[in-house]
Amino acid sequence: MARFPKPPEGSWTQHYPQLGTGPVSYRDSVDPAFYELERKAVFRRAWLNVGRVEQIPRKGSYFTKEMKVVNTSIIVVRTTTGEVKAYHNICRHRGNKLVWNDMPLEETSGVCRQFTCKYHAWRYDLDGNLTFVQQEGEFFDLDKSRYGLVPVHCDVWEGFIFVNFAKQPEQSLRDFLGPMITDLEGYPFDRMTSRFHYRSEVKANWKLYMDAFQEFYHAPVLHANQSPTAYSKAAAEAGFEAPHYRIEGPHRLVSTSGIRAWELADEMRKPIEDICESGLFGPWDKPDLGEMPVGLNPAKCDPWGLDSFQLFPNFVMLFWGQGWYLTYHYWPTSHNTHLFEGTVYFPQPRTPRERIAQELAAVSFKEYGLQDANTLEATQSMVESEVLDEFVLCDQEVLIRHLHTETAAWVDEYRRKTAGV
Image 1 (cartoon, rainbow, N blue to C red):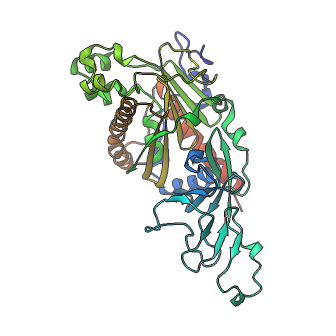
Image 2: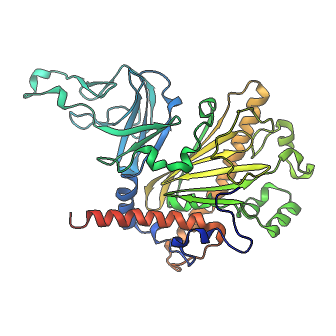
Image 3: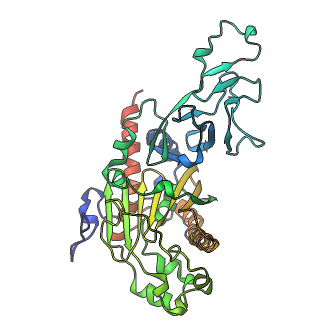
């Protein structure tokens, strides 16, 4: 049963009275001053996911991550002992970016034994130690042991690599995640190595895009063109209600029941879906992934559709009942722009048919994601008009209410801690 079942005449929001039920302000999505506080109060204090261990499969493997929201670039590397470490991507000599290819602002990856600066050839080993200085005798009392790469706090959970930019993180990664997330341990992430990636620059505040995926009752309306007109009209009139919402600490979950695409009427499926036996809900041939962790499908839906776990501040893991998962990242670049990344994960295909089924699911995800993003610039422009400052939310938008409340709480706490400093 759901941890917090919805009463027959009650609401999900009543389980979280601290969030209230009144109209909300989107001032936090249009105010440049709030964004500057948000960068320091949230993104420099929270644990941020930057990738997975499969991106650095062997010793010396590395990738860089551009993180404009905290005004830096980092290197994530697997050391000679197999440990995963992260460093600021800056040479200690003259401040040049240490690892980059042809375009300094583009991310890169590779394998190496050491990092060598393109400017004056200073070298650092995989543990960040400065090992070579060009014309070292020209420097004054240079102690190389004092000039290693600047480390970034780094930890790994279930193969997901997280970093924290605080001088000293206020919580361990595991404590930050909390039971709702750690109850996902045991999911076969390591088997999901067939990967499709997509990114897009979006002219809207990062929270507005997160809001788009924190409720699903928009689906029959916004995605109506993906279904025959008669079905779309009936679905929109009937509406949609997710069977489970949950908030724990700074994180959120929405879980939905599902449909078996192959059991839909023929006119409700596209010909390509029948040909490839796949679509938005994933390949019809569900892989055997073994026993699922206790944290999945908390409402015990049958059939189960998906669980969307939203890790504060900007990372989403969305598990499909058909045996695959995807992740979203929302990386702020200004108060009204951000970089959206979507990554789809499947088990390695065993046949060409399985590969094609995965590709159709990945393309379908991209199409739906673009439809969700299509409203955002219009939303941003009108919220910035300041014609209205308050907006009403329904019971199924409780997670939206929580994201904005939680962000404001982190900013308020930061203000109190730094007052008079």
